[in-house]
Every structure is written in structure tokens, then in C-alpha cells.
Image (cartoon, rainbow, N blue to C red; front, top):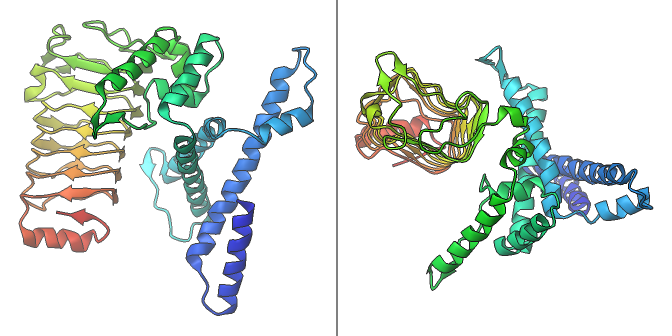
Amino acid sequence: MQDTIRINKRVINKAKESGKPDSRLEEQVKIQEIQQKILEDIISRFAQDLIVNNIGTGKNFRAENAEEIANNITADEMLDILQGYIDVYEKKVFEYENEDGKKRIISSDDKDYEKLKTTLKAVQNLESQLLSEISKTKSFDERMDKIEEKNSKNEQLSINEIRLIYELDLDHETPTKNGELDEEKFKERRSKTGKILESRDHKSDISRVSGYSQEEIGDTNEGDNLSFSRKEINYGDVILDFESSERLKIGSRGSLLFLPKKEVIGNLFITLVEAKGGLGGINFPQEEVTKDLRMDVLQSAEGLKFPKKVRWDLNLSELQFAKEVVLSDEVGDNLILSSLKSAEGLKFPRIVGRDIDLSSITTLKGLELPEEVGGVVKLSSLPDNEKEQLRLKYPKLKIE
């Protein structure tokens, strides 16, 4: 990376001398310099950890040994340490943008804020590069073979390896045969993952990944067992439907349902039949659902406040009215509101990673779209002239 930075700086200087400065490349170099500093910090931390871990073991382990090993750190190991940087800067940016629970007004020339945003962008880009490198050098099956071997020897798995076996947020290629899903290979993979998970201490793993103590982590539900209900987070999917949750009743005072206060590690599916007429009083996890959040039987809602982040889909496909509803600040994949009749009183996310389905909306009244949408905003029932108004208002969004 140092060579790339050096070459780019030469190009920048030549551009300035010719009277045509390249601001885009200057910004890119800023990010590269931050990334280079972070990489050096990671290698240094890795070497220090090696020395500390070998103190008292009787091994003749010196600083130069640690430095040699650290300079050959794998992308997997580097990604584990980088995750801590991402968590820190995401928190710093959020705290800068919010003060006393309210959004701050930040001026365009706020240098401290721009520096924070640039650093966060740098670590996120570095994460993408490392993930890309991992996928090139090591297939899913090769990684699983390594995990299986380490697990059988009771060796500690890296945080990234834990995220992989719990299928938290790392994608991997699907096995195919003749252009279709290779079911035999897929079953073999799931069987291997299942055997590894059977031998794992789930609370200890999730504690390492999330940073919560084991006492703050509850159990996944089975049938009527909602033992996680008053804990901070759970592990495993939370699936609450009529058959498995008959004792949960939705009364005039709202739901008797308690969910984890902070996070759901996995999917959150709520398909209670009683919820068709509305589900008041539910307290969603405050922070995050790491996969899908689906309430595809809910037809009306008032005053609901969703978790700050849903990493995959937020599916509210039957919701028709959403007065005073605050959706998640970030939705990683699709936001599905295909039955919504009116957006009045609905606070949309700030960011949606893929599509927003608003195919039943017929009026612009109360419609305030997100700042960023990675895919398409689907408004098939909206008149063409009103779609054009939206395109003028949101020139960066793709509206169909």
C-alpha cells in the first residue's frame, strides 16, 4: 500500500502543477494513509499479544519472533482485530451525530466530524478488501475444514471463524451443480456446521463476538420456552408463531411478549395470528437484529419503534397503516412495505441497502424517503407525474 500511496502522491503533485488538482484522488490517498496506519497498528498489536500469551509458558519466545510472525498475519486474523476498529468508529460517529438522544445539526465545515466519517469509511473499505482477499484465497469448504480441525483439538477459534459457523454476517458461495443448487453438497455442509455447533459453548462464543457478558445472554426459544425474554441478547433465531406460542395473548393493554432488550443474534420472525389486528405494546430489541426481522401478518401499527439496525430484510408486507411508527435507522437489505396505503406518520430508515417495496402507495402525502437506497424504490401504484416529482426531490435515488 505504501508504494500505491507514493505513486498517487506523485500524480497529485503533477496535477496541481498543471493547474488541474485531482480532489477525488486526494481524498482516496487520505483514506489509504489511514488504512496504512491501521494496518501497522494491527500488526503491532498482534505481535504484542503473541509476546504476552507466551509469557510463563517456558518457550524461548522473543520480540523478533513475534515480529516475524506478525508480519505474516493472515487476512482472517487481521479482520478479527479490524472489527474492533469498526465498532469503535461506528460508535464515535453515532455519538457525534446524536446528543442527549436527539439528532445534532452538523455544519458542512465541521472538520472533526469529517475526519471521523473519513476514518470510518477507511476501516469499512479495508474490511471489504480483507473479505475479498479471504474469499479469493480460501473457499468456504477450506475454511470449514480448518475450523473443524481446530475445534477437534480444542483450539480457540478466531472471532471471524465464530461468525462463519453461526452464519452471522459473512456471505459465502452456494454449492451448485449444472447451474442449480447442489443439495447433497449443501446438506454435507450443514451437517458439518451442525456437528461443530453441537460441541460449542454457545454463550461463550456469542459473548466473544458481541462483547456482552455470558450473564447478559439468554437462550433461544423452543416451543413455549421464552427463557431469554428478560435478558439483554439471545442467540439463535427467535420464531414466535401461533402453534409454538399459544400462551402468548394480545390483550387490550398490548402484548405480553418480552423480547431481548439489546440484540437478537439471528432472525426474528413474529407470525402470531392474534397480531393480524395490530400488535401494540411490543418492545423490540433496542440495538440490532443480525438477520431478518419479519412481521408479515401485521396489518396496522401505532407507536412501534424498531431496532436501530436490521442487517438483512425488514419485512412488513401486510402493514397497511403505520401511524407514529419509527422504522430501523439502517436496513441492510430490503425494506418490504408492499401493502402500505399511506406513508403519513411513518419515519423511514436513513439507509436501506437494497430495494424498498412501496407498491401500494398512491399518494406523495407524508412520504419522506431515506437518504441512501442501494437498489430501487418501487412505487408502481403512484401516478407518473408524482413519481417525476420524487425524482426531482431525490435525484440520487432510483424510483420506479
